[in-house]
Amino acid sequence: MSDKWIRCIECNEVTHVTDYDCSPQYQCDEKLEEVIEKPMDDMRNFMVQHRHHKIEELSRIKDSFISEGAYVEPLKVSYFEATNGKERFVIKKWRDDINDPLQYELISGYIKTTISLEVQLDEIRKQLRDEIKHPSITETKIERFIQIIEKVASQFSAGDKIEITAETDTPLISYCKMDTDFTREILRLSEEIFSAEELKEIEQFIYRNNNDNEPMTLLLKRAFTIEEENSKLIELEKEESHLDKVVSQRTY
Ligand SMILES: [Zn+2]
Image (cartoon, rainbow, N blue to C red; front, top):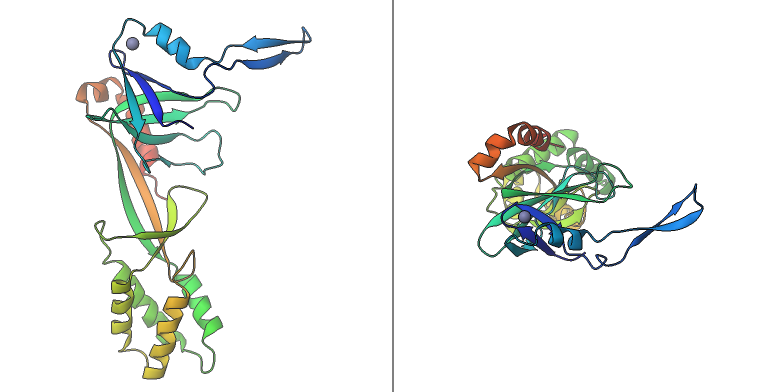
């Protein structure tokens, strides 16, 4: 998929620059029993429609893709950012029906993302019981250990460097690694709970289970809103943008 878009500055509309713009799509007409050609040249149509208008090229901003739907969901609405080098835009992409072509809408603004981190409580409990057995760690100590992890995880801020270690089937949830500062802090606070022997086991447990989607990694959950910059546009599209925002603010 190309990362280039053409924007009509006067109409504020976009079309995607694709490799397939010149290839027609063939469809079989069952009644006529023959193959008919269905023109697919969206870009050429766009260029004809806006031929007397000023146009410009937009490039997609890397890693800005976000959507409520799973990656494989064909009818999901998704958003990403694009720029002409000076201004930032949001391109909304969707299709109404699986057989319909993709539709795009240009929004002047940006995608505002908020993140929250969740400790994999049940997975940690289960893994501790499975891995540390001779002797095992008491349930009280496990619960206190989990409280420490939650406390340390709550100190993460948006500015902290977060390393994504695994993705899920939706862009709204990923797994991320606890960095060395956080694991050190967990171990420091754990000194109050565990004996020296247990602490060694816990330290190894953390390092063994802090990759991919393993129990010590955190669930990184994203929520997003589309922030529009043009107040006139907000007035005109109040109904629709309000709906978009309500949908977007749902957290998963
Ligand atoms: Zn135009």
